[in-house]
Length: 350
Image (cartoon, rainbow, N blue to C red; front, side, top):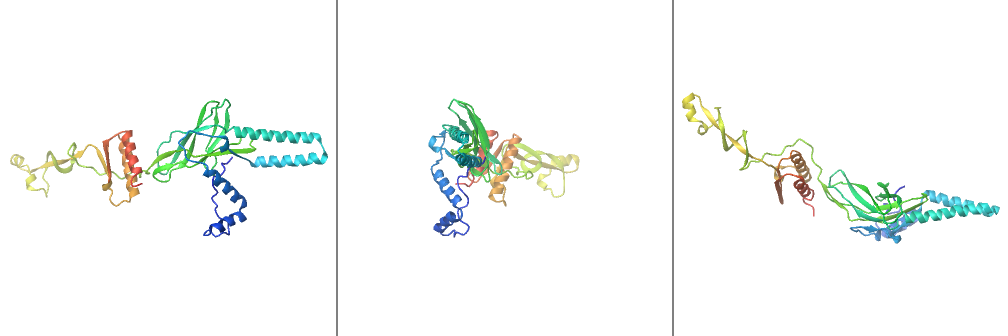
C-alpha cells in the first residue's frame, strides 16, 4: 500500500506554456486529465487541513475512501458476473453476485470505521545533527471498544513508515522519519493516516498536520583540529609553555637568553649561568571562540565548534562557547551541551 499523494508534482502539461496560467491549466486538462482531476481534489483536501497542536480527532467528514487496484478488479468481476447472470437468467449466479457485492459494501463500512474517531497527538522528537534523520513520534489513541488493525502512517508519495494495531481503549505509537538536511528548526509537514483493512479492496485515508518541530544541530566536523589553549588568571601552570605568569624553576643557559633572566646568585656558586624559567597559567576550562577560526566560512566554523563541544563533553571538561552575540559557560553537562548546540544551530537564523 502506498500513501495517496497530497499534491501532484506535475503542474503543467507537456505542451503547455508555463508562463501562462490559463495555458498551463488547459494543457494539464487536455494531456493529463486524471492528473488534473487528482490535483484539484488533493488541493481541495489540503486546503481543509490546518496545522494543530493536537490531539486531533479523525471525524467522519475527514475520511476519504477510494477503491484500490484490487477493488477495481473486484468491481469489474462483479460486473461480468452480473452480465452473465442476466444473459443466462441464472438465479444462483444472481445470488452469488449480490452476495459478493454485499461483502464489498460491508467491507467499505469496516474500512471507513477503522479510522473513525481515532485521536492523534504528538510524541517525543529528539534533536538531531544535520545529515541525520529526525524521527517524529505520533501517538494514536483508540477510544472505542474494538481494536483497530493495520493503521498506516506515512508522508505524501512515500510508502508507509509505520504500521500499527491500536488496541481497544488503548494507544500505540509510530515514528515518521524525515531527513534533516540543514541546521535550524525542522518542521514536520502533513502526513497521511490510512488503512485498507479488512479486505484490501478500499483505501481510506485522511491528512493530518500536527504541530511537530525538532531542532537540527550543525553537522560536527571531522576529528583532527584541536582548539587553541587559552591563558587566564586562574587555572593550572604549564611548565613546558613559555610565559611570564609564574616562576617554574631554573634551567641551563642557552644562547639568546637575555641577561635579566640569568640567576646571578647561582652563577657565583656554580660558575656556570642558570636561567630563570617562567610558565604560563592555562585556563582550567576550554574556550571555544568563534574568532579563533579565522579563514573558515560560517557553516565550517559552526561545524568545528560543534565538534569541540562534543569532544569536551565526552571528556567531561568544563568549556566556554564564545559566539559573536553570545557567551555560554564555563560549565559541563547535558543542559550546557544542549544550550551550546542550540545556539550553534540557530546562529544567524531569523
